[in-house]
Image (tube, rainbow, N blue to C red; front, side):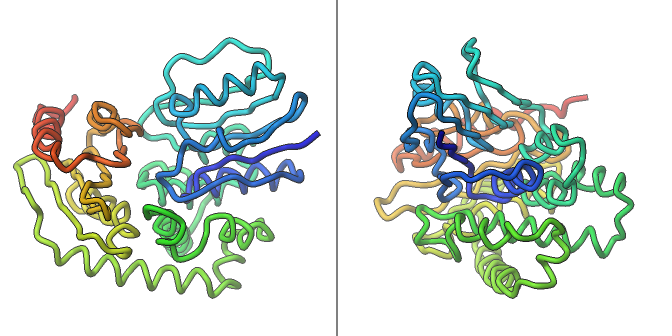
Amino acid sequence: MAHFDVFNGDADGICALHQLRLARPREATLITGAKRDIALVERVQAQPGDSLTVLDISFDTNRAAVCALLEQDVHVEYFDHHHAGDLPMNVNLMAHIDTTAQVCTSVLVDRHLQGQYRLWAIAAAFGDNLPRTARDLAEKEGLSEEQIEQLCELGESINYNAYGDSVDDLFIAPTALYEAIKPYADPFEFIASEPLLERIASCRDDDLVRAQQITPLIALQYGSVCVLPDEPWARRVRGVFANALAIGEPAHAHAVLSVNADGNYAVSVRAPLQDPHGADELCRAFPGGNGRVGAAGIDCLDSKQLDKFISAFARVFNRPMHS
C-alpha cells in the first residue's frame, strides 16, 4: 500500500513532517509547494487501502478532496492549526486540529510525540511568528540564549524560503529543502553542517532590507498596509516582512501586499502579537483567503477590491484590545 506525505512548504510544514518521520520513518510520496499552495490533497493519486498524512494546510480548503479519499477507503491523518470548519465523521480520518492563537502544526506534532524532537518544533514556532510559544518550549528544554537565536534564525530562514507565487520564486524547492534536513535529528548539526542555510539567510536579509525601504501605503493608529512591487524578491519576503513588522510593533496589525504579474495582489496579514485575533476573519471574507487568528493571507486579491480590503482591515483591527 502506498503512503503520501502532504505538507506546507514553510517552516511549520517541513518541521512538522520532519519530527513525525524521525519518530515514525516510512517511505512516502512527497507532495508540497510554495506556502500559498495549500490545495494539495487533490494531487494525491491514492487507491483504496492507501494512506496519507497531511500537515499544515487548511482542512476547509482541502475538504472535498479529503472526503473523496475517505470514501475510497483511504486512511488520512491530519495535523493542522488553520480554520477547519466541521470535520466529517469517518473512521478513516484521524484529525489533530487546534486553531488557538499560540499553536502551530509543529507544536501539535510535538505534543503527539511527547516532545521527542522538540528542537524542530521550536524552530518552526519561530518561523511561524510565534516567539512566545517558541521561547516557552525552549525554556522547558533549558536552551541557552545563543541556541535559541540559532533556532530562531533556522525557522525564519526555512519560512522565508516558502514565500513566492510559485516554486520558481523560491531560493530552493521545499521538497529539496526537506530532503536536505531529513538526515539531521539535531537541528544544531544541520545548522553547523549545511552551507545552504547561510545562503538562504543572506538572501532573506537582503530582501528584508529592500522591503524596509518601502513607504507604507497607509499608516494607521492601529496598523499599516504596505504594498511591495511585482518582483521575485518582494514575493519571497512578503511573509518575513509582515512578521518583522508584527514583532517591531506588537500592538499593531499589519498587512503586506505584493503585486502579481496580473496586477492583482497576494496578501499576508498579521494580527497584533499582543492580542492575536481577526486575521482569519479578515482574509476569509475575500476569495482565496484563509489562515488562523494571528496570521492569514489571500492568494489573489482583485486590485479593484483594494479599497474594500483596507476598509475591512480597519473594521477588524480598529477595536479595543481584548482583556
